[in-house]
Amino acid sequence: MIEIKDVDQTARDLRPLKRGWGALHWYATLPWLIPYLGLVVMTGLLMGAAPRLEFLPVWIALGTVVLWVIGSNLTHRAMLHQAAKAPSRGVPYDWTFDDEGLVQTNPLMSSQIRWAAMREVREEADRFIILISPQSNPVLPKRLMTEAQIADLRALVADVRGQGRLGRGVD
Image (cartoon, rainbow, N blue to C red; front, side, top):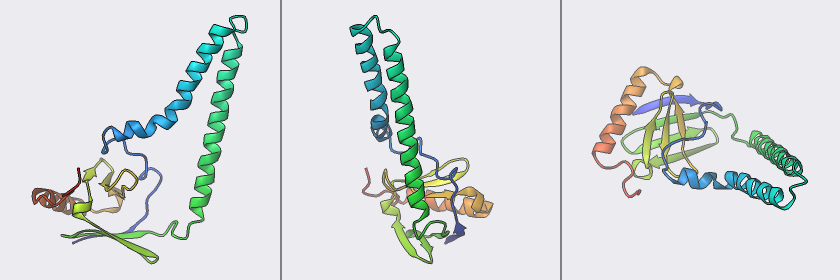
């Protein structure tokens, strides 16, 4: 059993994943790319339709980008504001890895994730990422672990993977 007490993640720990879910990552970014595509098409149409108004498309493009950035920023701030009010915000978790999987507990809640429910345990330079679903990927920062805990977790994951229990039934 490997126990890591008082796991509290920082923004750096929770940075977005760059690998782990394959092409789904690119499909998920399409909503962010569509405004740019629309902007390019609109600018092209305006430039072709109104050659005498050569600066109009540029101003429309700049205005669209500025409004999009402001709207995205306001949305992000509103989400952060609401997240800060959540009752479980800032309450650290205790993580326990054993032969069954992972148990995360704090005074307000607990969750258990069996090895079969995990697609992968991905190790990065400064964190372990438990890939469960595209929307749920718990992050364990290595800075909160001893070298012995890191080695034990690597060995446990290798053992579970070798037994064919990690991600069993997950495509």
